[in-house]
Length: 121
Image (cartoon, rainbow, N blue to C red; front, top):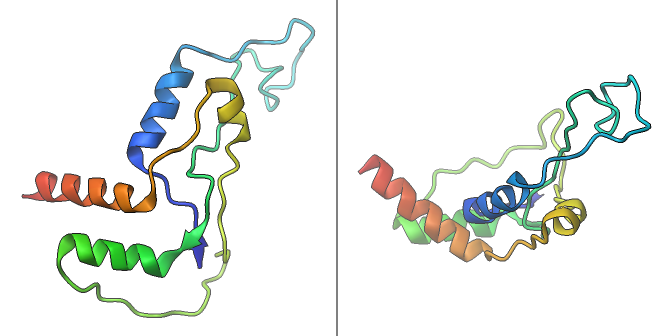
C-alpha cells in the first residue's frame, strides 16, 4: 500500500498561509450552498499533503528505528473500502497560498516520535 503522508509542520504552515486569505463570494453567484462560490458563507477545501505517495512498510521501519523497538504487524488482505494508493493533489493550495510541502518522511517521522515521547513521557 502507498500513502501520501503529511508532516504536521507542513500542514500547519499551509493553514497559516491560508488563514488570511478567506474565499470570496462571487457577485454573480446565487443559491447553491453546495458550491463554495455560491454559498452564503464562502468556503474552500484544500488537500494538504506531501504530494508524494510512498510505501507504508518503510514508514513502519522508520518508526521502529526512531522508537527503538519492533512494531507488531499483521499483514492483512485489502479491507473493504480501502484503496491501494492515496495521493494528495496540492495544486490548489500551492496556487492560493504559495505552499509547497517540504518535509521528507524521515523528518516527519522523527518529529512525530519526538513529540510522542514528550507527550506520553
